[in-house]
Length: 251
Ligand SMILES: [Zn+2]
Ligand SMILES: [Zn+2]
Ligand SMILES: [Zn+2]
Image: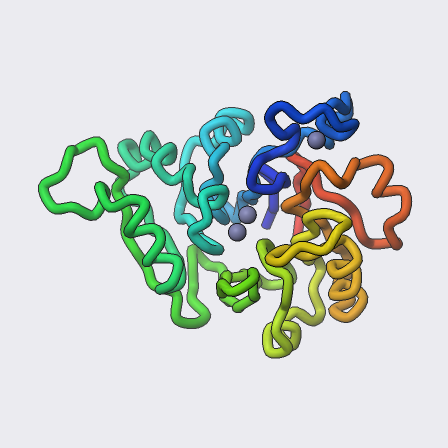
């Protein structure tokens, strides 16, 4: 299984429009962050976690041709506004299986109401909705959905074998922590250095990493407060800042 970071930036992306800070003006490609999403390649199958606002650009960049399914963490704009841009794949390959919690479907059905209307325009996204209620099989992979807290909102994290994807949260409940042991790779939210009501600070992420002890941890959903080279220099062994285009092979 291969995991590729399509985007590692917070909701406004980095650079942030009009910002003149040193991260936004940085020449380092690792400081150029599209909105957060990963692609999982498993055999012949591509599985997308979140269809970010930048999905079209991300898909063109890697030459993506097909998708077996999309898993959604939640329905905030930066995680689902790219669903409409997966239509060329739907037109070629047929309707797209999409997996989300009931809460996330409430948002997706509202945002994409036109896709669920009977007798609508033929060019709408073709979605096969699956409501996540527990572990499920997807193209030979066992997917374990886990709940994390994003301010007042429950967001779905995903564990697939030794890989876990935990973004958009400020708290990981005890019962979820219990299911995040023995990981080869933990991808975890680390928005910025200052406290935030719905995301983890770098120190909070490092706290969870210290407790969960994955073999390797990669930080994502990063704002311009974090400059890749500067902040990387002070991270503990086994913890790195993810960047767009990074691919990791997992057993
Ligand atoms: Zn987000
Ligand atoms: Zn900036
Ligand atoms: Zn969010």
